[in-house]
Length: 446
Image 1 (spheres, one colour):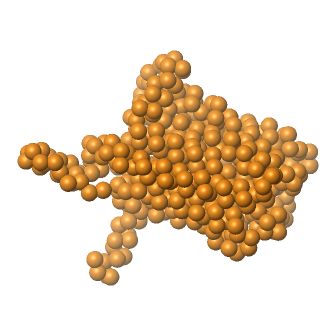
Image 2: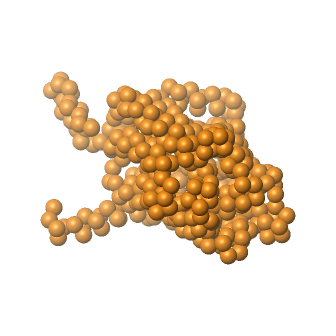
Image 3: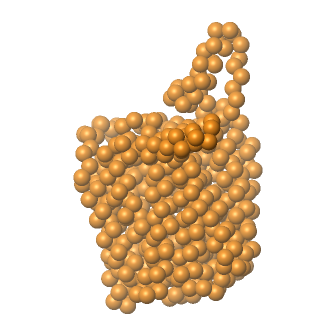
């Protein structure tokens, strides 16, 4: 390729990255969620800062994180069975409305100066119950909005871009609003932001839902679990996400401690830390969106686990603000790239009638396991300090990467025929046919 050809190549990659926006329902969803997610990140930062301001306790920070995520641990497996039976579009309208009510309740209590830690715990737990149903429904509904399965990787990558653009913008706005007017206004803005996504859902034109098999919830749960545990790629990916969620992802709940006690800053510092992670995560999502194939994502997952763990270790040892901000970029890049790559592979290889249950276990391995991690992280931080807690988590993530390396050959062997059947590896399919005719095994290069 010559230098003159470079702009055409870049334009081609950009068109590929944006092709999910060809679908009307997805365009509506993307626009509404983009606004709503900014409000969600504002609430997350404001809640963390409010808890630490009221209590000055790393343990209570962990407890609030635990209360918001523990419902996912209990409810998400059942939610997956329900999502495979219910109309997912209708489910999302209900969950988004309930989330809006929760944000307005937080705003009312904070703005009238009547809020306390137990009210925060209760409302956060309520939001966790809503999220336990919303997340698998939203993950599964993406496929229904995309008529052409070839556009699915673009949709998943754009979802990650949307979340991380909001992660960049929301905390920055929240830091300024908290400093000027207080946390309550962040909650209020978040409440109004849900109107955008509710409007987008109401404007969608969705076909009649196909009739889904009605089966006993426990039987459906058992079927989904047997499918996952018997399928090595899904089992390995979910185990990796669960372990990293337990050991590495809870770093985020300790950021107020770093901002205040380690870096000696205020809400602006917390906003910068979260925003820097958002910059890295957004870059990661855009990188994935511009990939023209999902081939090679397994190798990328392995690399990202190592870089995530190493970045956490360096961040834990950093006591300087500018260096901590810089290190948050690879932390965010690795974390979001890992989740998006795992999500893309699972959405590609899963059987359609089990999609809701598989995505519910994905949600369980991410948000369901995190409450245990945040509780452990908060407890450890109050004993050995936030920096050493994060360093320990990073080291354990690297150990998880080493474990995954031993599983990759078998995962590739099982996934490859699925990719061939889906047409993702047409050149391999051609090679197999030719080799079969010659009765000679093909040479397949990863």
